[in-house]
Amino acid sequence: MNQEKSSFKKSPRFAVLDIETTGLSASENQILQVAVVLMDWPKVGQQSPPQGHRVSEWATYVRPSPLLSSNLGPQEIHGIRRRQLIFAPSLKKSMTTLAELTSGCIVVAHNAPFDTGFLYAAARSQNIELNWAGVLCTLKMSRRLDPGRQQNHNLVTVCERYGVALTHAHDALHDTRATAEVLICLLKAHGIEDPAELVPFVVP
Image 1 (spheres, one colour):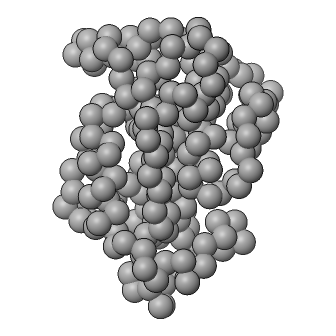
Image 2 (image 1 turned 120 degrees about the vertical axis):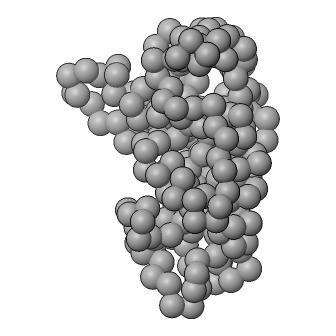
């Protein structure tokens, strides 16, 4: 834990991410889309626009296996059609890129256990190592501000609460961009101005 605190004294880089899947089980369902927004530690007290903290972004569809007979799950929610997946990269290629992009970063997601559960399972299946500095869940951060659970904390509602635009919910890239902005709002709401103050929120 002391080593973890020491690492957060530097300015960390966040890898904010989101995935769309064929279902809710990491052991039985597949990833169809993944997006990552890389973001440097924001100077929380400054009034710079949230997108000014972004370093880069990456998104891809992921070709399920086998493509033609795979059940794509709740298409009425994620909107992904089979024709969008025909020329998409394989899971191995997608996970290789994701591992390279997120190496050494604090991974951030809304309901992070869901996203990271799928990504850890996918990485294991492809013999790929994920070298993350930790995982930060914006859903849990939001709930900590509401100990009596008087509010809804899904991403759409949290975005509305903080005035963050989310025009295409359940598209991985749009959800990721919104989560990156929500993260900055939550850092302000918790009064976090130094990376060392992230320690209570970050899990290995």
